[in-house]
Image (cartoon, rainbow, N blue to C red; front, side):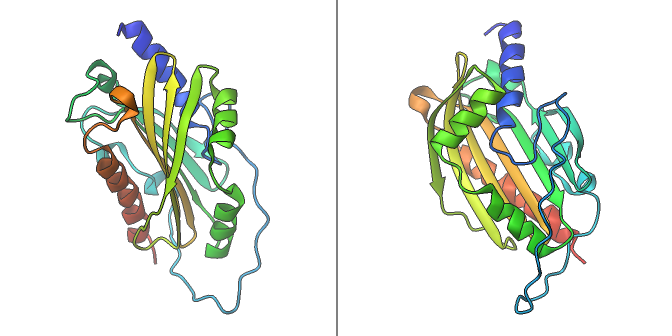
Amino acid sequence: MTQHMINLCLLCLVLALTAGCKCASAPGLGPDTTTAPSPTPSATEPALSPVRGPAKDLIIQLDDLPQGFQTVTAEPNGSKGYTAFYVRPEALATQGAVEENLLAVAVDLTIHDSAAEAEEAFAAEGDLDQGSLAAAMGEASPDATVIDVTSYPLALEEASEAAAFRVLYEIGPLSVIDYRYRFVVSNAEANVVVTAPAQEGGQDPPGLAERAQALAERQVSRLVEARE
């Protein structure tokens, strides 16, 4: 694959990764400033220690990722959120390698005013299915074609809500696998997308699922450490 094609695929990938993340916006398009109405807290719900601190400091950082990643963009997303995109271009040049097969990580984090607000925002996103994702990706990048979307149970310690999806799609000549995680920790709502080139037949590179979940768990840990 030529360097020009690598650059083109990375550009398309960044655009495609914005699809399916409620708050994420493509570079240059500006943040989504839509805010959900504040929910009424339930008197029967136990009080949760709130996450404190700016989303910029609590989101997964470059130091949390394997060697070789670089920041594409990291920017505020409205008044409460922050979005970061990281890529590792070498993964495109060494498809099929067992080690360091991660290509990209996209993270969107919003620190809501309350746990109830975060729960409501999570519920408002709804489910991720092949039709809705295909439509969203088509708007973000005409080169993206969704092949399969599979949801599976996910348990993240300290997360009150969690959902996980495996997505197989193509961007031009490149077959790509995403592991997409959505979860709520106290008053924080996060989306984490971990991407790698697919192997022959749309199969995962070795260890991809484990590496992806470890990054989701790292984001949870950063939020738990910031609770009062």
